[in-house]
Amino acid sequence: MAKSIITAFNEFLRDKVNLDTEQTKTAKASKDWLIGQISNIAGANLDFPKIESLFTLHYGSFARRTKTKPLDDIDIMIGLDGNNCTYSLYSTTHATIQVNNTTSNLTVLCNAGTNTLNSIKVINRFILHLKEVHQYRNAELKRNNVAAVLNLTSYDWVFDIVPCFRTVDDALGRNFYFIPDGDGNWQMTDPRIDQNRVTAINQKHNGKVLNVVRIIKFWNKQKTIITIPSYLLENIILNYYDTNYFISDYVDIEVPKILEHLTVVINLPFYDPKGMQGDINTLTIEERAKVSNIASEHAKKANTARTYETAGNQHMSTLYWYDVFGDDFPRWG
Image 1 (cartoon, rainbow, N blue to C red):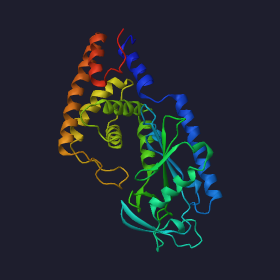
Image 2: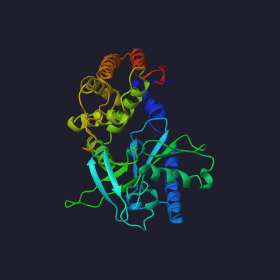
Image 3: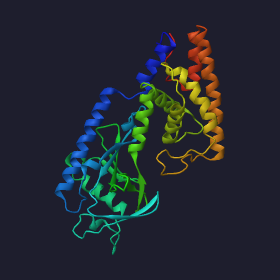
Image 4: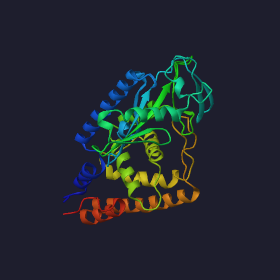
């Protein structure tokens, strides 16, 4: 049992919020092994896209170190060799890719009678050949909108495997990625922007931001009314610390600040920091109001908990933190 609010939060972060170090090491090793198997498949099968390993990206909240317990999914973008493909960009969320080399491994994955590459066929080709890997024969393999999903019985997490192409550099040396859009075509993205943004803001505050992001994500999952989309919530917090230059050494001091901030910004449009998806606040007006209300209520409870702690009443402070974070918060004793 916790002997102070400081130790309670340290225990809470360690035991309930942050990922286990050893599990993280195992996950990274299994991810690297999977990437190696995909490379082997590509080298051994002419009906499989050629791999461009320099374009493979580790992305998502696990890669950005903003994921909370449990570790239930790991995202990988597998870079593919475009082999002189070209693209037609209609919007950031709708593009087509044309295969212009008749000897390319991609020709068998085009729409019938065309040279237009079908992203669903690409994902399904991953699924088909991953089933041939001995260690994956008893795994569940399926397709979601943009990824091949590999669910291994030996691990607690699934792998979301996203095929991708990186564009050639433009006149300014810029490039971006195409990933499946769920309908057979492609969409723009660039996870490097998200990764660099997290790293820069966290470093600006001497590494203190990530624990705040993770503990607020934990809070978000405990609510019984409306859950804020994780990527949206993460970027709201990052925006806050990008424009606010003070952060405490103690995460409990930051919690009511972020909850109070949420009561306002959740009602507003929030634009994708990559500049590719537009407004990513997809909550309805009614859902935004519910989130704002509960954030306001919990901000008041968090501030009350802080008041009791300052007054030396650790027990009462803990009771209010229970109301914010639920029964997983350490007991007082």
